[in-house]
Image 1 (spheres, helix red, strand yellow):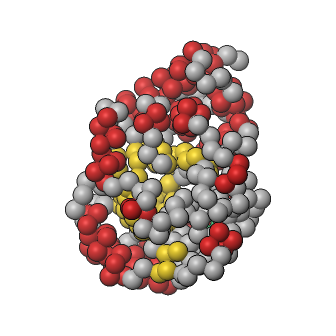
Image 2 (tube, rainbow, N blue to C red):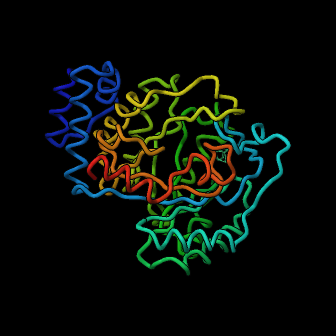
Length: 318
Ligand code: SF4
């Protein structure tokens, strides 16, 4: 099959399969075919999302040596070493949530390490729900859980959950693939919106591995899909493997759009102009802890502000 035949299949409304995704992913960066893939994804998203960009915001609640010990994460037990644990107070989180709610964001994410108490998280969630507008989506980005907890998240006011099977789960992370899938099933069963992402992408990942993650969402109703490159955070075990280029990320982003056809938005982590021209229309503003940052207040480090995010969306004519 040629790239043109795969794109024709996409335009006819036929779902792309693993082989199709691999054909798109194996094209040389900068080739004519490469740009055709980016163009097709850009057309899909501009039309489907009607030219509208979206900004989500995330607050990282804690920085504790996390026992899941993902080899790319600044909050893993190995990377944190003897650094002191930090749990932000409810007052601090509420104040950040109130400030973010005044801005033009649609979805607010609360993120924790896997060490954070589930009960405490529900308390924080309920409090945040009370200070943000009713129409604002509230999303949990936390460790694994079962159906009972998923239902409690919903009752506490969460509308969705960001949860994924990471690339090389169980090899580069201390989590089991089955446990991650069990959580995805709980999210679906509880009727919470699932946010998915192919991540964290490094230079060593094969096209087949990337395609498998893009196809995983076929089993689940996912409104917002995303891709994220791995950031080579100093002090993490995988930092030496380096990072993929922005050009390659744009190709992966475009392929993910064509394979998954996200109905509500396509996200890119971290904000990236090339990807916004290759099918992405949604980026994050971040504050608090961040697994991709060594600064405990990522808003003073890598994290974008809401204004930064809108500026970039505008630059790329979203
Ligand atoms: S990515 Fe999440 S689960 Fe993995 S070590 Fe970091 S905080 Fe823990």
